[in-house]
Image 1: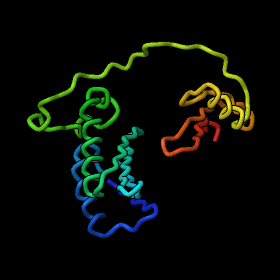
Image 2: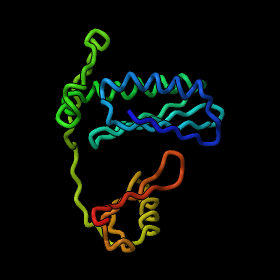
Image 3: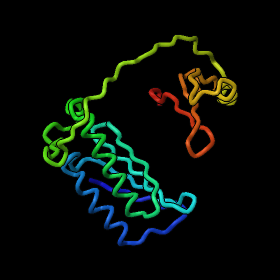
Image 4: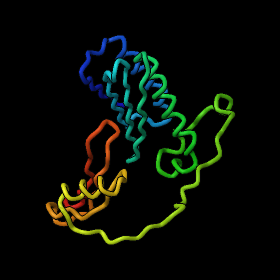
Length: 178
């Protein structure tokens, strides 16, 4: 697994890096050597944030953990990704290498029931062309977490603006023409 470390507003010791690499090595058996991992280390209001993102077979797995100890944040993040894989094992077998999704049965005897991915509500509405600024204004006026629109500045590509946990807004747009 290829690992990338990102340090935001802090310096990470070599010991912490090697600890993270050792813990990520546990996930090698789940994802294989072609997977890519990115760990972001940053302080968060006097606590420590470890954000772990793993890309394997065009699937993304992400965990965001904040604790009083960076080592604990790494442990919690790795455990959260293992839980994601375990919970979605049957669905992932079709996309991620089947033989690599081996999870020891005794260690995870308390299997959770498989999640259903069925919409409980369907909404239909016209997607109107507007600027990103107008879409953010509409998002705020509606009080929603996200808003779908056609971005006039990007040739009316379908885009989404959303409210970020850290504050501010994010933009997701279609890049299939890029």
